[in-house]
Structure formats: C-alpha cells, structure tokens
Image (cartoon, rainbow, N blue to C red):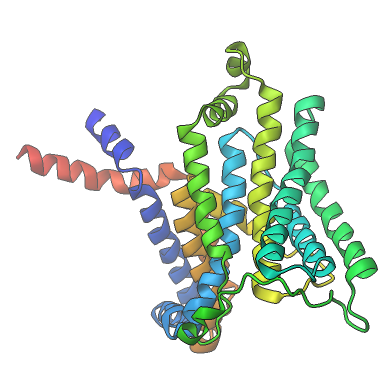
Length: 357
C-alpha cells in the first residue's frame, strides 16, 4: 500500500491524463445514446483544429485568453483565494486598452502598444484589488465581491464605450490603431488572428512559477493560502498578501483583455452579456491543477475542444454543445480523483505483483 501511495504521489500527471480519457469516454457514450458516431465526431473535431494552417492558428488564438484567465484563477487559488471575477477583470482590461489605444492614437506604435497593454494589466489588477482589499480589511468573502464586480465591470465598460468611444451609428467603439497582431505570420497561417498575447501568456506563466516558488514574497503568499493563522503567527502580513495576490491575479486577466481587443477584434463592442472568458478560466485552472504548466496544457486542451466543436457540428452533424459534456466530465474526474485512483488501482497492483514474481 505504501508503494501504491508513492507511485500516485510521484506520477501525479497520470491522474489528469486518465481523467481526460474518461471524459472523452463519457462523451462517446452520450453520443452513442444520442445516435451519433463518436469516432466520426472526434475525428471531425481534431480535423477542424489541425486540418489547415488557418484553423490551427485560430485554435492557438482561442487558447490564449484561456491561458491568462486560467493563470489568474490559479494564482489566486494558490494564495487561498477564489477569484470568480476574472471575467470582469478581462472586461476592465479590454476597456483600459481601448481607451488608451483610441485616445492616444497619435503616439508612435512602439510607445502606444506597450502603454495600452500595461494599462490593461494595471487596471485589471486594481479592479481585482478591490475584492482583495475588502477581504483583507473587512473580511468580506471574495467570491461574493468578485461576482458583483463582474456585473459592475460589464455595465461600466458599456457606459464608457457608449459615452466616449462609440463609432457613430454602430454598437461598438472606433477602430483601435494599436495592434498586437503578428502580421508577419499571415503568410504562414492564412491570415489567422494570431497575436503577441500568446507570448505574453507564456511569459505570465513563467512569472507565476518563478514568483510563487522562487521568491520570498511568493513563499509568503503560498503560506497565507495554506494557513493564514499560522502565517500571521509567523510574522507575515496576511492582509497585504491577500491584496497583492488579487492584484497579480487581476493583472493576468487584464492582459487577456488586452490581447482580445488589440490582437483579435481591434475595437470594443457594447456587450449584451459577459464574454465568459473568466468563467472558462476557472475550468482551465481546475483542469491544470492550479499549476502554471498544468494551466497552459489545460488551456491547449480546452481551446482545442472549444474551437474543434464546430467541426463536430459541420463534419459529423453532432451538436457542439456535446463538447461541453466532455469538458464537464473531465473536470468532474479531475475533482473526484478518488474515482480515477480507484480505476487505476488494479493496474498498479498488477504491476507490483508482476515485479514480485
């Protein structure tokens, strides 16, 4: 039994992989019950993603905001916080980037673009910091405040666009000259909307790992997340770490907003509803087990399934909503790891018996 525990502890990557396989299996069963061919459906899904250079580029574009919002949720979680407000922070980041990009359009691009990106990250962080401050100073649960702040961000953004940025006769802002698009790759990816936000996301993941596991401040944040009372007894400023963690989490989400508005659409719409990036980020963070590398891999999987779901609809006549069942099943098995371990247990015992013989 001790050997079995050791195997599970050292090979922790096995559990997520099996959870993914079980999720696909559940999706296949549902398709069979619904009268669909799961082999054709999954083949159409992956053909949609890898069938052309354009679709592959667009799939990468789909993954990028998921990486950043997943990192935002995961960073807060590692610090003992549950950031449900990444969606609102994305919107605030988009709005900040739009305001800077439009109102300072006369600046050179090499100055305007970095300022717009920095503004998006800064305002996303400050907006998340509101929930952190209320948690640290007033003890208000961050889940409640971040949910409420999502709605405030949505309506505040719409007000700013309608009042200061609106293109006459349209339900969107003026065009934003600042661009994160990687136009030099257009000839390779058939004009897919690739942008520098992908590299920003990878840089954010690197920062996430180095800051939390290689610095004193990161150690304090993880300590506060594990046991705030013990951290306070050890002389750590719990309130300051809570605010700081939420700020950094919001910066990641704000950068996701900058990537979308500067790299994909080049304008900001008046939203009828929340874009949903932050809520998908929660799923990505859970799939990635709140580790930066895991979040990047989970975003790749989630983005592949999301973008490829259209292929299931057109190529195999399978409703794209079924892919949500697959994603939900994977998250379920990730959360209920006891089920996965129960499935794996006979295989490990068999291997152990073979070694003994």
